[in-house]
Image (spheres, helix red, strand yellow):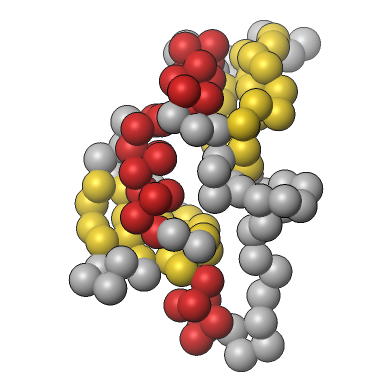
Length: 129
């Protein structure tokens, strides 16, 4: 078994791809001709986005969509960097909303939290250990 990708269902796939490219430097890997699904090259695991309309075709009983107006869902995308303050500032400049400024945890890891324009929760952190 291998963890292959995470898909976030969003309103606008192209806008999400653009934001994550601008904020975190992930290059575009793929976008469907209909722009209802797209992937970014993030290394060993692919970060992907799909439209809410596409999700509705996958889940007959519906699903809980990310809502920019509601509290963040209890799941986050975590990105590891050696410079959390710089990455945090770059993400805010690209359109993210700060939830928690960079701070050092008791075990020495620097961590911050942001909310992306599409409502997805992101953690920026230094490597553990």
